[in-house]
Image (cartoon, rainbow, N blue to C red; front, side, top):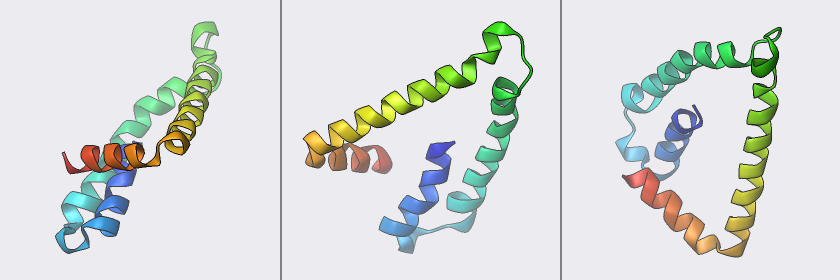
Length: 90
């Protein structure tokens, strides 16, 4: 979902002349909408024991990834820019 949300931002920022409303705005929005229902099934309140801890585990993993990303970016900013550009252009 985050990749779908990031695509329009990336295209508008770095490739504005190649912007296609269907390809770079409508399709990512549709992709986010399609993923919302299964995501809600994972985090909806009132689930039995193993499933009721999933949102907290996912949030913890997300926080750890954010901390790792910030640390990696501060240690080598050039490498982070290279990886982001490489992934986006593939």
